[in-house]
Length: 109
Image 1 (spheres, rainbow, N blue to C red):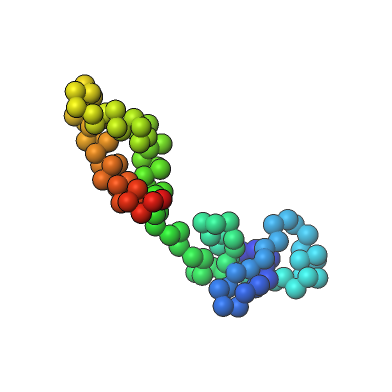
Image 2: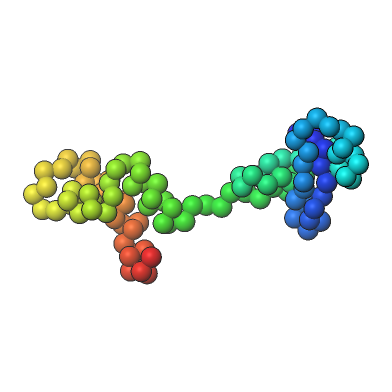
């Protein structure tokens, strides 16, 4: 995407981008037309230099699964309790989340 931009960090190739239409202003502050891209974090970089989004942490994975399934830790304990009456499918989901979450509790997170 071609925009008026100015390199702010030569090492990372992060740029400031002019998002409006005042070309003379952008030129007056040292911006020039460049091919840029927006990174996952909202910052702008020269095309090809935007950092990739890091893989989610285990904690983030657990939180996403809890939100997606509604199986918070308290609910998982109820589902996995003997005689809970929960379906095998729900028990399996709860066990998968528990397997991910267990090391986090051991670390005290």
